[in-house]
Every structure is written in structure tokens, then in C-alpha cells.
Length: 159
Ligand SMILES: [Zn+2]
Image (cartoon, rainbow, N blue to C red):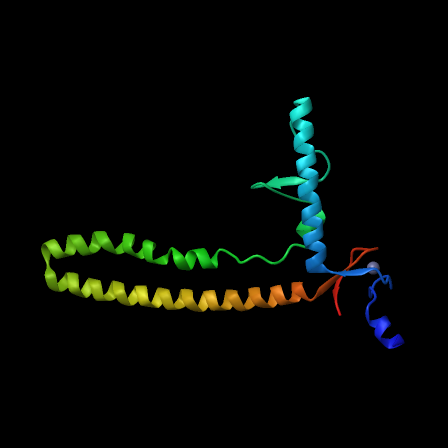
């Protein structure tokens, strides 16, 4: 019984007031949103622009410095790059194919094959990159989900 309670303390300051990071993040974000709404009302009444304190507005979502520190990991732009690959390649290939077909058919076919092979290679590399990114993201997210935060010193740790 005693050994179990020892497990659930902050390793830095031995405080027992610890909370799951994901729940803490949710509560903190909700509180900030409420604060922003409050500030918005003040702006309307007094006609004064700007938010006070340490809140920063990013695309409609306000996050405190703490919320940014405890935010879940984000997927990098690798996913977007993977999705936009087809468009990039179509844009690159089209002029070559059109011009080549107008002059020399065998050269156009050869060029087409080379470009398709390059495209396949690029797609496969992108798939590998995406898979690697997903693995890293999943690992970071699992780590984030199993993290705890100390209510006294703000230390983030895992049990
Ligand atoms: Zn602590």
C-alpha cells in the first residue's frame, strides 16, 4: 500500500499533487478559451484592442506559455508533402510529354518511362518518410499521453 503511494509523486519535489498531462492540457486550454472570451467582452465595451497577460492568439485559439509547453506533439509537414507529390509531378512532367510527343515519339516514350520511374522512386521514398514520421509521432504521442505534470513545480515526467 505504502509502496504504491510512493510511486505517484513528483520525482523532482516529491509533491503528491500530480496530474495526467493530457487532462491537465485539456483543462488549461478550456480555461484560456474562457479567459479570451472574457477579454473579448472587455474589448467591445471599452473599445480597447489587445489582449492582456501572456496569452497569444493563433488562428482563433489562445494558448498560454504553459499550454504550449504541455501541448501534444504535432505531425510535421511530411504528410502534406506526401499528398502534394502527385500534383508536383504532373506539373513537372506535362510540358516535357507534350513537347516530346509533337516531335519524336520514341524519345517521348523513353522520356515518359524515365519520368514514371523517377516518380515511382519519389513516391516510395515519400512513403518511407511518411511511415518514419508516423512512427516518431506515435512514439511522441504515446509518451505525451503517459506523462504526468507536477502541480507544484511544473515538472513533466513519466511513471
Ligand atoms: Zn514537483
